[in-house]
Length: 249
Image (cartoon, rainbow, N blue to C red):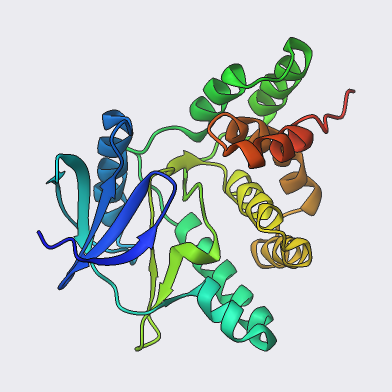
């Protein structure tokens, strides 16, 4: 494998291009189970027919674990939004349509969103009273089995020169309630500092999916608590504040 051309650098991984392949190389110390789970999620989501880069191999490069997929030529929706701010609403509209397409599929072999969130809430730094309230709220939410991306943001959608959309990064994929996935995307806009975009996104998602805004908002503390466990230090405080917004009834 040729690891000369870097196309993306993240906190704990680097993505290279080698011809028609994209090679995601994980830093030493990255949990092997998480890498294999990401590859398995990708293979399972492939079977739904959603437009994603095909998994080609799980291997080692320079002694580090790597996931190899097809390389997709194009620009991310985030790049397009940054380059053409006047078209933000148009791109956001497409972004929501792609997310609704994801939610229209089922994938019975994916992990349960509810089980994952229950586990994460238990691991969070919230006190026992807040954890109890969030566990109770989570259990009261309807149990669905829709494909949920878990990290759906404009950087994870590539638009090809032929105007075809591909969805990247299935490491957090689960099956569960689409409104929880929407709550996560809402928080990602906030984390990126785009508060106006967050509100526009939530309004558009609710309108297109015919979902009550209050219902998605009810998921936000649950999602924030579960995401705070592995969040970056600078994100953790922000997420903990959202997680602590609990309506005691």
